[in-house]
Amino acid sequence: MWPSPTVGGGPGAQPHVRHPLAGYRLLFLRTTAVLVPALVLCTAAAFLMPSVSTLAEAVFWLLPALAMVAGCLALSRWMALSLAGGVVGVAWLLALVLLGAAEGMDPLLLFTPAAQASWATALALLAGVVLWRVRTA
Image (tube, helix red, strand yellow):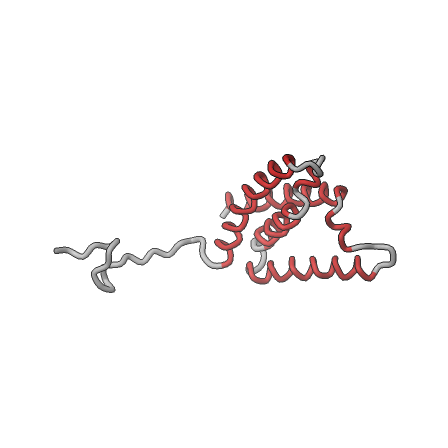
């Protein structure tokens, strides 16, 4: 009986394939693949709620998260993905601290309907950069 590469059969029987997408890059691409449908489904579900009346309210929390993941992927063109995640994370924390320290400002301003338009624009631009990066790689 011949060893099957799918069942086992010893160390020489398993083919080793190096996948071009591994590590953090694969993690972030999978995160994006989860957040996009989640954004669509949560938006649809939010419109079924009696208190939500606009699209901006429906995607209140997911749109900034998706934009930050796209930012990490876009920055990974020029730096390691772990460093890109750190840069985006530090920028997020800095924005929260600055808004919290400013008089009359609230960190929750990052989630207002007006801010949602900015997040959507950033997401569209960053998604374009990510698509450009994937096509030219």
